[in-house]
Length: 259
View 1 (tube, rainbow, N blue to C red):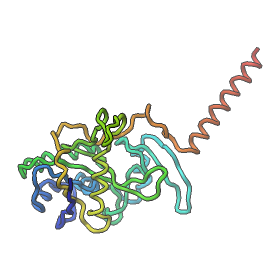
View 2: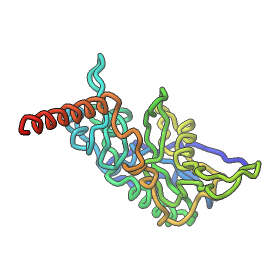
View 3: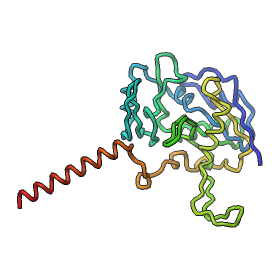
View 4: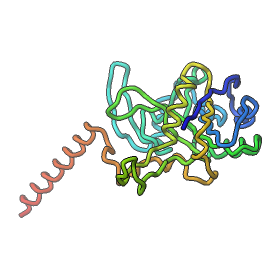
């Protein structure tokens, strides 16, 4: 088993209103089963998700649904939040890297819908049965550094669900469900890079994961709140527990006084 990843070079600087499907189709020859990994920033640019850099903090606040953790440091304050897309990460995905000077980029409003539109356009233009993953860079709890993950997907099985099958030794697999979309997004970043000006990569040889456009998108990767064991940061959890304990003790004292 083998696969290859090749960056799509020669794409112009993307601007609002550009037809990404047409630009990509004109820049590379696609085959059935290809998966295109597209940096979400170029999608944001084409969709006009750009604000002035002076409004960055306000934009982060506007994109935030829930604050998970905050940390002060010499450069200011880092906010780990859940954004409108349900993604938990720093600064709600608002980013100045690879953005026009004096501006910052917001994530696409609906990354799965953006991926679906792009996959639909590419299939129509090329006649090829391809899938699309929109990627973005996130840090990870407990681990230094960052990696790219899938924030949008269309025409791709985002999981390889092995539950109910057996491993090479014949032992049953009860929980094994690799997140193929994240694995592919991370691998493609090794070709795209952050400063090479290559926002799109073609992954070839993984056609078994390409399917219909109505497959669940990347939003299905997000863990539901009821299964989230780390819903808030450590300091926030401690403070929340302290407040709850204080409120409970005050209530008990009030009840004793009334009695």
